[in-house]
Length: 515
Image (cartoon, rainbow, N blue to C red; front, side):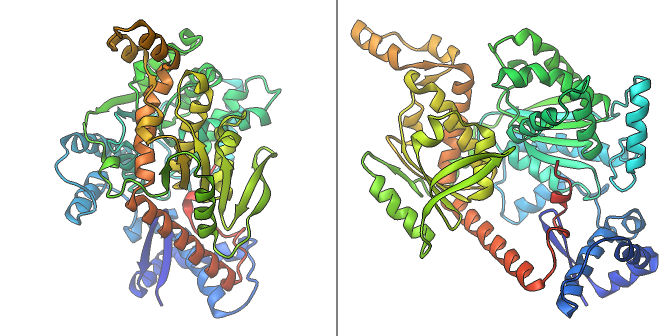
């Protein structure tokens, strides 16, 4: 018998020999206790159901303290992100020759080795951190102020768009042992979770301390992608939130387009945000990825489902209909966040259609867009305009929408008045505006100034958005999206045929660690 064990994104097979060795070292007892002490029920007593459940239990056993010393499948010295990077180079999966990425990989490998060596001191193993111990720590922290700052510093990676920051952090994350208390999440999603938890603990003397304690109990190693601060509410709570997180032993790994000292630059009440920057630099090693290559723009296709021109609404609806096939599109209502509901003009077969104004000219934000992406894998957006001073707020929402869709690997169909570069050409940073050559004709200068949108945060987000729009319409991205849909369909069919209540059994360990 060969049991297939899912851990994160990887599938590995446990041979009968390995299986017998595991059983000899106590895994049989571990599985037996799981069966006796759990509430999992087999809906059908057939061979297939027992096989699926057995695979799940073996997965749990492989990550348990009883098995990890025997199986040799979990991380340790000799592995890590640099080793995996070299394997992908050799396999032709990644491009070779970028010294900036190699330098970053060395920093990630250094952190990986430190974490492996200090795993016990950092309390990374989720099976060794009991709920009782967590409650005890919470109780005593109420009476006696305590600090358990991690002996290992985190890592803050920053650099230009398309330099591979997210890919490198994911490569690092995927090499970490599955039994560690770890979390990889987009910064937008992380802050939404924080605000949701603050609302839940409303009325507590210091809700930020409680929220930080909850996050630390679940994830000692916190990997945040696209760290950026544009909201004054986020800026005001980050200092105290991360002080509590670091005091609870949390180790931060983050990626960002901006250096620590440039975060929330020229933002409202930035003086209250500056202590956070000092804390961040104290608890993380800052490393710049200086590559001048935008890997997103090296993709093979440039058009995809991005259609340039006016009066293309009928054409977009035709393409939308082609994607949903025989299904009939109709208005829908979906729940997005904390009970809020959003009206969808047309939706069917995982695809939703919106006029641009509906999603970006109304008071919607990242939470709404995350909710949409949980309900729909494809969004059709009709009529994206050229952005300037007159529609700056809509530009902010569009940038956020693109970020959320990219993070969720969603597919975008859109009609626009210009190419991705042309859409944001009139958006500039303060520094860019100061270096722009003055016009000789006063009329031309006046017209240009009236359309120019000088905004630091939007200006810095501009290149990232152009880069992501380019990649999202590439052949590689669309093939990846199609593969993701095929995997979901296959998993759905297996769950349906297997007859096991998947609401109780989650084979993907990442889901078991969600906030």
